[in-house]
Image (tube, rainbow, N blue to C red; front, top):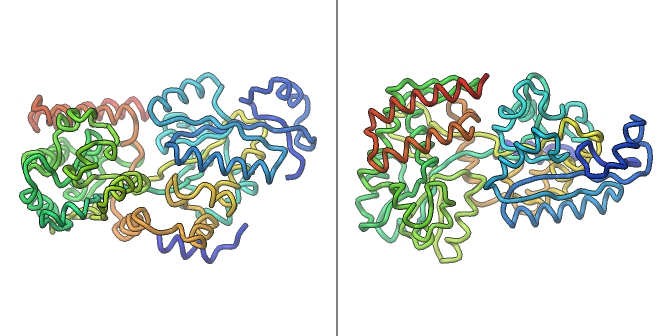
Length: 446
């Protein structure tokens, strides 16, 4: 991140009359007239672009503020906001994309490229509007490669993120526990916590990602390759699951049924669990881009969340870290006015006015101009920046977006749940998981 900020501080900062709507706009009159002339962008008609995203209330309000500023700067372009929470969002977008009714501009997850654009034709090729997007001045070739499919730039990476361990330092200090540097440290910490309290809490998905990270440390190889091939053997999966079982047996992490007893289902946001808010669950394995949502409620209660990074025993071959794009912005492949859509994306990604309005609620941005603007106003600080610096200093085996595929997540969660509920032994779970992952990968990589 220091390198990124340095690049940003050194980087240079980077419409005419505009039109009506994109292909998926509700303005049917505008669509009919636009079909008669490809040069309609030279008229003074109003453009209305639909923009869809998921998030919480903080993200919604920041984005709405940015939209208002954009419309003031570009009065001929109106942005129709379509936003919701995450639950059910992917299903809704899948239906809209399949039906040709998706928004003109979309916030998409990193695995959406694989879901909706295997050949690179699922979203608009942003290379065609590189000037309007300010690509050359704000994004490196490596940045752009992350959103490229079959030579076509389908998405612009908004921010990077990774999974790290974070601990409630206030509670750790209370019990005489130390921020763990090794997994043995973490296991020893558990002995200092009273019955019913745990050094960390991990839901079903979190638990596998933590176990997978350990497995990558031990084997020195990625769980799944970037092109979607299972790289762990059944024994490697057993190593990871055995580690998770040890964390359960040593009362390092919460059983899934303990989370369920608090109204969660293994996927509930950790920050909403009563035992996390009162310090009984004293740590979590969370994305850097989301950690502030967990730290904020603790701070309100006088407790401090601190970075622990990823513990590593002496025989670790690599950090095993997971490091992925948090999300992309994309343009609908059917959008009739992509230049106008790109102008909006440039505003919220690179223009200091738009960047400051958006803030860091989607993570610390990749854009050089955005980094410069946020550095100038003092926003580049806190736990997320500490976490990104840690990740930058401990690069590991390549991470893959396949771990975020819904079908893959279901396999992970089912396996962890069955171990936690003592429905499968580790040996049985390892075999079942190995077979199920190979089956799912054969489906989603076709």
